[in-house]
Image (cartoon, rainbow, N blue to C red; front, side, top):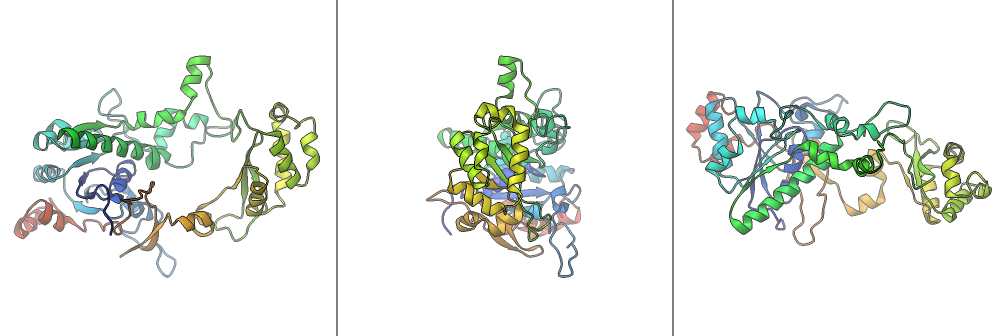
Length: 418
């Protein structure tokens, strides 16, 4: 296999759920050895989160090793089971950190204090450590010990207020978006910056990523709009202040679509010429001269009527056919794809080979997200499946921590290791 840019680095990953482990996954994909510290006393809930692999009879497989959620974001890592609620377990944690380049956690400061993993403690034994702490509210402040996930962050930072339709309750973004993209992306960027500093100076440093502050910048112009104009941006559905139409429109049902036959196409345009092309394709060329729709200001003023008309015209089309016809005439349009489309139908995704299919000893064969970026000379890739719970405990103890077989056996008997 080709060399990867983070080969030779080791990450002591004390994180859980999504934001921390997904950051660790990126580091792993590009070559770092990631030791995922886990515990039977508090199993990572993603190990028991849907979707699960199924048996031949259609029933779900059980146990801690078959979650597609967990396995997708932990491919190639080592699983090391350690009881951090014991003094000896904390000593082993420090020993692992001493032999690592990066420390990663998204636990709250209260838990970090309990396990004696504060920066001043771990940097004292490893001054070169890049210590990345990513609790939801940061390491200090009145809310520093508040717990939360992406579904909590979206309303707290204001994203939910702007997501949905006017006169309806906020609906958020339908997923724990901050956990998948924003927080891990910012965490990895900060870690790489700290590594560059260490390469130049030989010194490690503390990286604090308050998930709250990481996510709030996705509000875009909302804060500036309020500061400049006193305007509080709120829900506008799919509409845009600079385009009309700008939304999704129902197409003909597709009974081969798994889950629901509903099919939709997204259309977004501003130019009157492009609007005329859309009307022509949809069989209503007269619409672009209709006084209600003959200019952008007119379309914005009559947006309800415009969307109702387009919705009627698109219903007789198959979504993929309509997308192709609109795009051929320069109309910005795209099918509203689901997971089945992306995996099975999207020729562009298939041609680029984004998904990497990996065989797991318990979950079977499944698609895994590939690297988010492609490096021409040192590409990232997965080296294997997600670890079974505690699969590498003995290896980590022996190869990394330097323990003997008898010492490992004694620690297991004492339930410091599992």
